[in-house]
Image 1 (cartoon, rainbow, N blue to C red):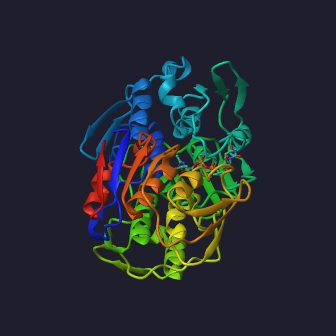
Image 2 (cartoon, helix red, strand yellow; image 1 turned 30 degrees about the horizontal axis):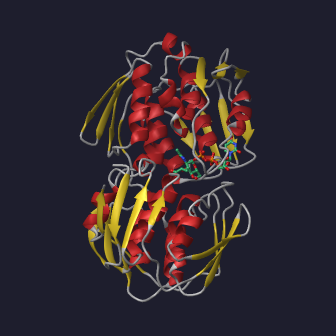
Image 3 (cartoon, rainbow, N blue to C red; image 1 turned 45 degrees about the vertical axis):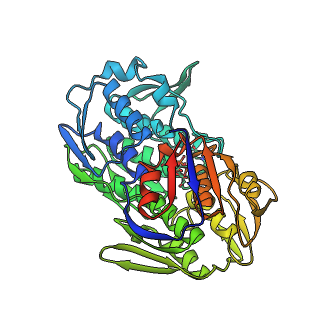
Amino acid sequence: MDSVYIRGGIVLQGQVSIQGSKNAVLPVLAATLLAEGTSVIENCPRLADVYHMQTLLQSLGCSVTRDKNMLRVNTEGMSRLKALSGDMPKEAVESMRSSIFLLGALLNKTGEVELAYPGGCVIGERPIDIHIEALKQLHVSFEEKSYGLHAYTEGLKGADITLPFPSVGATENLLLAAVGADGTTIIRGAAREPEIVTLCRFLSACGADITGGGSSTIIIQGRKKLCAADFAIPGDRIVAGTYLCACLAVGGEVLLMEAPTEQMQAIKKVAETMGAVWQETDKGLYIQRRERLKAPKQLITAPFPGFPTDMQSLFLPVLALAEGNCTVVENIFENRFHIIPDLNAMGAKIEQMDAKNARVEGVEQLTGCRVQAKELRGGAALVIAGAAAKGETIVDGCGYIERGYENICRDLRELGVRIYGV
Ligand code: EPZ
């Protein structure tokens, strides 16, 4: 399905179960490489990026089997040579950012790895300088090669490391390496995202000694033997936030089951300030929007626990239809306003002042038209705009959306949206 058709303007009503977290499961799958035996990962979403990670693990000699939403990863067949010979399928490595987590895991497991530069998307340059400078402090050497990076170590040594920016990926890579280092590693200025907490929980379940996961200072006692563990991935906070935004943009009431509400407090603050009803019940997150929402003066993205950058695009259609004006400040990625021209083609009034700032002037209504997804969260935001717009919308380029959503059409249909793959 590369395009979806949406007949918009129908008030939402219904409930949907939120899939497991993409950004949590990917580093956990990389971490399974470090655990002897068979790890069982529950609530694993069916996504292109997860499939790519499975392919990478299999190319390293692991056996990976799926049974519905459960993945079993057995590392007994993993061979050092494979990690060296660059056997990892280039297309899988380059197709997603998460292949970078293999750097820390493989340095821990084999001491050497050849890796093509990871892919990314149009939201930004996505450099890995913070990863590299931090790993060097654990006694890793790097060589630039034509295909990418050759990284090796005579033995990982614990260190006291301060990150210049709380990079999620760099924190995860450091954790995956430090659990196998000699001695203690301290990560200062660590990312605090829920995905870090989940990775620390999995590694601890395998026998690692980690304290401070989720805070900005994480302490790892290395060299612990890690054994396979059974582990359940939490719900995806951004997918839950996506369907929340559909309700805020279109109106109505929805129940988001398995939504990780404890990870969504910054989103809650904005939604309630705008006038939405937010109720955390034992069945899930109940959201209601009856009246037109009021725009906040500003929406500013920041590292966790601030407002998530991944929610910025998803809130644009909500702000476009709210009463009043809002200045959106994107502090994390340098190119994350791709959908503004598409939203304006639908009748929104959004002006991009520069790479970081956009000004939204609320309008009463959007009108459906044909638009093009260019990346994951922007594509989902265009679907939300189509669900709220009068008339018909076609969103092309939905392959991007499938990288993060198991089945956005199925989920939104359960909430009452008339949406079909075409
Ligand atoms: C993770 O990306 C997520 N991806 C992103 O989600 C998310 O937006 C981001 O964290 C921030 O929360 C996955 O977990 C697979 P960063 P990551 O390292 O690790 C710069 C989605 O929609 N930077 O925290 O790449 C970087 O360019 C995706 O699911 C460096 O300069 O994010 C960016 O501007 C999109 N050098 C900022 O830091 C580095 O070495 C944040 O990047 C690393 C990062």
